[in-house]
Image (tube, rainbow, N blue to C red; front, top):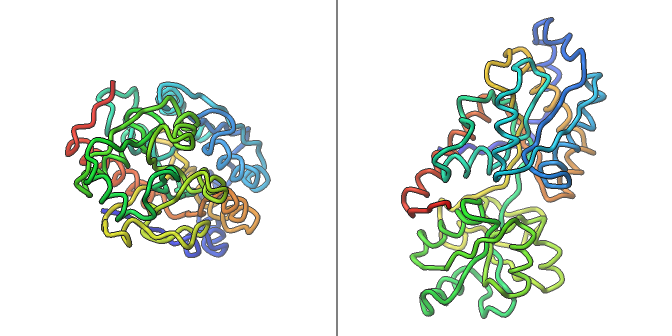
Length: 327
């Protein structure tokens, strides 16, 4: 099951204020000291940038400093485990994403954390599409032509990814499965070298975030074919979706959301959720996210929990169907 959230409905100021007024007194005295937000990616990453946009407002709203602490390593497992093992007192939160709580649980047989049991979801903050992108030398202008060329030249075309088990990897295998083609996977060690591989023509195609590929598409260094969300991307409104290209059910997003360690008091979860909704409703916050290529989302902890469960289940089915393995 897939859940779609309306940004305008989820981040209304009235909703946020009503939720705050309904909170228990104990939650309204929280926080009494700075709050740490762990991220599993490096400083300067999309996870870091989204976290900073949100916390720039939460600091003022909640009267305490928010400190972002990067713990990169092992494909996100290092930082995610650290968050899972932190005290469940509301003073350590975690900015999860589609890797830590989507693709990783599906592709890795052993993780030092349980994406569902070890965390209490708070709120889905932002999301952005991936874009199916081709090197300009490839004689295709849309998904239909790419699929036709791949069928005409089986095993000749390849696609890049940020590494085995990454969302880019799973997106490529999803295309292979749904289109009945065989693009050869070329894993790189991270998104930057993978993008370099695409722009240099070392790989034929790649799924990349809309904000990351947009300047290269404008310069003519990359040719964009379709976005992986049900609706067209505001940053590239002329670009069709994979559904419009003839592949219903093809949906992959890059997303970010706040979690707390499991068993964090519900009143604290509700307080952070309400404050985050209030922040996301501010034009400068939603505007800053949009400039980065992200849509503000919002919603309830229950909706975010359902989203995570759906992501893990969907990627797990894909892994089983395609036989994806991670070294």
